[in-house]
Amino acid sequence: MLTIFQVILLGLVEGLTEFLPVSSTGHLIVASALLQIPESEFLKTFTIFIQIGAIVAVLSVYWKKLLTSRAIFLRVCAAFIPTAVIGYVVYSFAKEYLLDNVVVVIWALLLGGIALIVFEKYHAKREVVDTPATEAISLKQAVAIGFFQTLAIVPGVSRSAATIIGGLSLGISRVTIVEFSFLLAVPTLVAAAGLDLIKGGLSFSGEQVGLLAIGSAVAFVSALLAVRFLLQYIRTHSFVAFGIYRIVFALVVAGILVY
Image (cartoon, rainbow, N blue to C red; front, top):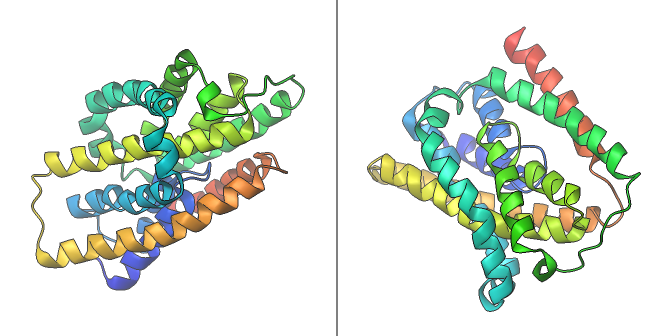
């Protein structure tokens, strides 16, 4: 069983990394390994369930935009469809073979960091078609972003990084694709948590329910801070720093846990 300290730490890791292009799932797997938390079905469920805290954080900022704009709602739904279909198909495989695989995470973080840096260098030389508002994203672009998001089924890839790179490559402006990535996280994370709870039989002890609640609450607070930070950061910076961080983090983790 997880301790309160472990629950709080994992909640912080989830909230701070969920919306940054560094992979929250990858960080949670690494954190669990460093804390020497025994692998269990509850741990896997915990790392998925506490994403609810991140969802509430996004809704607290964007609930009006998501629920009152029909155009935005339709685009989020369109982007979610590829993720829903592909995610459902590969759910069992991903949970069984990927969600506790540190080696997969290390390689995904490393290669993803390199890809992020290379993309930014290439992207900076291109003329970008400005998409000043989420409503301006076409349904075709939304679906394409949804397919990019499915890459994050591999832990360490990062859902945020996949959608942001996908959006930028389609000519969508930075602020717009980051905000759209936040909005798309709502149905994606709800579906992931819901599917896991249903597949797991919704069977938890009172102590486990308490741990899930604490982890989600911590994730909410830290995710809210991360959302506000990223929105300010991207107005004057590229994602190169995140790419460098991913590479350094992957090498450090490899040195500690693998070699």
